[in-house]
Image (cartoon, rainbow, N blue to C red; front, side, top):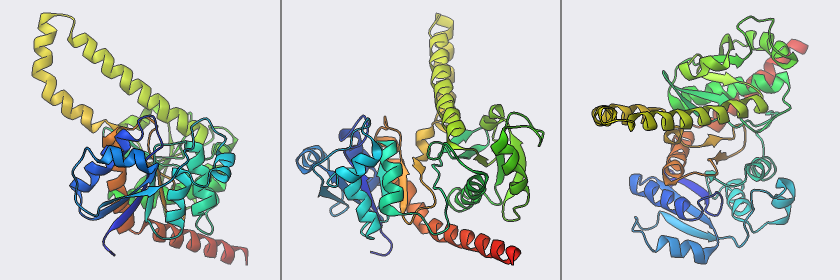
Length: 344
């Protein structure tokens, strides 16, 4: 079983649960033989969903969890009060070593709280950030943080940069990834207090490839491989990114249907346009890992379809194979030792 990646999947979380979640699990095991999925949720409903599919024996198992944490519930109260919920049951499997990873499209707040309280942080990690991959003209960039820490300190952002660099190099395969901090201009003296304090700290880091400030308009062009910011800014960037992409696609489709000539043109460009849109489809890259924990926790969109669920599950295989947690532990430990030496 050493070569099998075990994923605890919250089957009750998200707008399209359990249907799209179960379907995503089936798609994943059909594609990969090295995955074992534990569907956590209300057993009767999950058995009914699974009955409509055929899939390899032994790769999907139901783990009963009677309760469901709703999106609007206070996260801390929900994690503490609903111990038999699909999120808590799945996260405890990761904590106990019964699963290598946890994936959920459910309550972001509950996933963040559960990740820190149940799975636990790697020793030395101050704050675990959410880090989604954004499609760009050059491939993808890692946005870190996009929703976990709205009141971050400079030291947090420095750790985000280091963890993000490890992820981009090991999972995405980007050698010596560039790191930029989100700012309102290219000049070092620009920005708010957090950016101004963090900038010189990042410049001093010898273990990252820091290139300076990155403006929001430069992100879709792939200005940096790792885009560092606190969660409020990151979440605004992520939501605007998704909104503009969706609006632009609707505008293009509408324009193509305005006349007979445009409809004929649409038929001609459809294959190329379909390829281009696939490259810019964020769901192709899976969910956002919560980096810096003792186990892998991945948060997918609340509106995730089976494709994003499937890709998020497969994403966990690479994470495990590349030993991301071990690399983060080593990097954090090295930083602490260097800091200790400097103080002495």
